[in-house]
Each structure stands twice: as structure tokens, then as C-alpha cells.
Image (cartoon, rainbow, N blue to C red; front, side, top):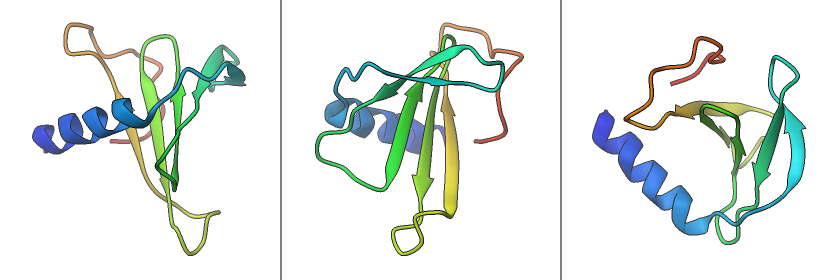
Amino acid sequence: MTHRLIWLFCILLTGCGTGKTPSQNQDGQPAENLEISYARGFTALRHKNFTEVTVRNPWDTLKILQRYLLVARDQPLPEDLPEGT
């Protein structure tokens, strides 16, 4: 499972830009919406202590298939993580 998350994170990094559109996390703190150049079907939000990747169903874009929470290996898991993998 860990290898899959690392693989997904590497793919996301290759397609991510440095968008500056602000969003908010559950606590109302600002989160950076990352612009994706070539991939579709998911969104990536960079929060203060983690990155949230939401994968949507391509046939029903209102349905979320999976939510991944990416935390740096050298950082402890934040207490305020939303529900996800």
C-alpha cells in the first residue's frame, strides 16, 4: 500500500503547478489549490501540514471515489487530518 501512495504522489508532483487559488480546510485555515496541468479527475489541496488529493468518478463527477492524505515521512501525523487514506 505504501508503494502505491508513493507512486501516486510522484505522479501528482509531475503534473502539479503552483496555483494560488485559496481554499479552506475543516478548521477554516487557508489551503492552496494546486493547479493540475495534464491530468484530470482529481483535485489537490495543499494544507499547512499535509496535502489532500480527492479522486472523483469520471462518469459522475459529484461522486468521490477516494481521498488521499499525503504527509511527509519526516513529519508526525497531524491531529486534524480529515477522513481519508
